[in-house]
Image 1 (tube, rainbow, N blue to C red):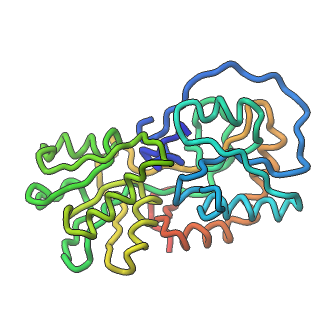
Image 2 (image 1 turned 180 degrees about the vertical axis):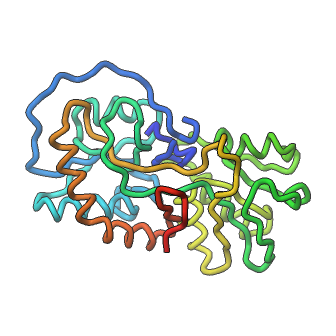
Length: 278
């Protein structure tokens, strides 16, 4: 990103997402209990578009709806801001059984198989015809750059000596009051920036709000020492391997439909070797 999964990745995303919103905080393990599978109980951010909101408008909402239909059970939400303590106060407190938008391998959860892979992106205005798709492009030294602070691309921007050209946008925010990804793309559209660098699902979604005026380029040419792409999975409680396997089967069976949902939201999709998916 993008629980505490900020997707430095802005989350999700989760992020990573914290370096990328990917950091989670430790808590004691909850003793095993008999799970209630009469509903698909999901915990999510009530104001975290493009991932989720309490109106069901996010792509994680749509994926959760798909899984609930396949299970033949109602979908129930517990809403909690995507901030420090998210997992401790939701999944670990047994208020839900599934958290979408977790970076694969995140602590404090048992990760399902990933249901998509994406990367940080560079967004520019099509009318400018810049054709820039790398932080190493020397033309950035003369451009106004928006970047999410505390993320891998921000590190590369600093290493390139470009901080004097940067307008930083917050990584960790109260999503009920602030939407830095949306603000960055709006600032780009308004001509206050020339380039916006942020987590792909966020950049792709908000770029689409401006019609076909934006070019979204995954950052696939950066040094391998700085990770730009991440597998995104769902999280279940440690010890619930059977439930994890059930979710894995659902994700596998419905991967095509999930990809359609993600594409509809402008999520840049990559394969395991970081090749863009059509």
